[in-house]
Length: 310
Length: 195
Image 1 (cartoon, rainbow over the protein chains, first blue to last red):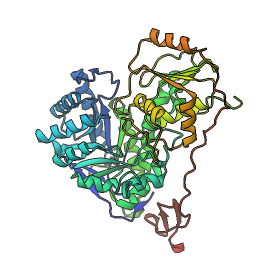
Image 2: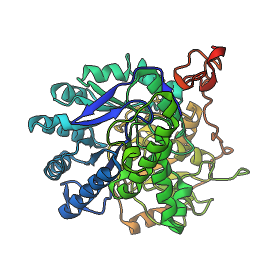
Image 3: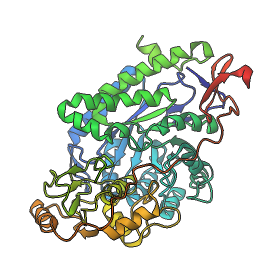
Image 4: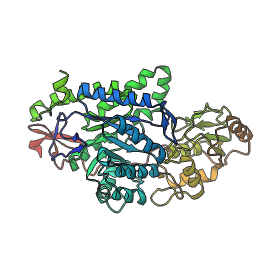
């Protein structure tokens, strides 16, 4: 549909390429495992879970990736340091996929970056995320670690407009005395993915779509999105889910299409159970985007869904 | 109340609108409490808190807010609601004294916060998931005290965003066709010949 004038960066995370012009590379997809209330988790504080079920979910995501050509990452969520380290160990034992380190607790994120550095797997990890709540301890831990890839979140709670989100990344937006992108650089982050941040439906969720275009046009960095958080925050849709669960699933999975049409490179699609639905959808988007740019001098990399599936 | 209430929709369920108590269950999902004016979860320390305030100050019948259920890890909306009630916000909208990750109020003015502080007392039972205990507190406060002696305060309009700096195209940074470009910042697609 369009191409960016700016030279676009393509990141290499343990062999997986993320970024580039729309239609050029397959979308990269990351399913979340061990998320809050994940049925396979038996003790979220200690990080105890059904290992067989977890391995099956990771394997299925990888099988989907092989089938469509859309590379995958494992999005690991852990609520405590003990739990997230146990999860990282497990994922690395059963899979070669790179992974995202995510927690709502800064202490758990810090423990995770220390751990992956200690055991020599930092090059496979992506920090999720550097955002306006970043603590001095977090900055120090990242600086001291070998982690060099991070999502930088454009969520500005003081000004959630497009201008406010962009300002946070660019100049600090009144939160910092310099932009969050510069702060990421100071923390040793060389591979930056911009997440325009999904706020709830009715509170500016759609701003993220426009920011995807604007941020990519301005900085040329890959864009990531957890866009499924928009439908999951939608009260009306949750009520419809009681009526028919598939209605919710269609919206949750389908939201990935919107992010990809707005030039996202990596989609955090939510529960890893949805892999078998999301991968075909992303492949379809990739094929359509590739065809839309056929006369704009965009060619596809080897293994693109347009070569595998049509 | 002349306007439809609750003024901001969300996960909160309406019970008895003239009850003196509302229940915030944080990250816990309990069945609605019929004797509470409003009950339901609040999982975020910014937008979630704003909704509670907007729905509280638009109903002067509410004089108590019971905060219970499991705290939402990292976000800490319960801790944040207590801090807001106790300390208010600073000049940047940051909720003073909150331990939550991103505790900011963006869409409410200071007078709304002050009204909230004056209208309700908070009952801190963060961590309580015993439904019998919660129900007892609800019933104890459902008819307690007088209505707040002021008119409902409506703050549902979002703070006006600054308009885009310009609708003029500055540069075409996305190519759509050989003679058609988009200025991503302005959000306009236009002919390159017009640039």
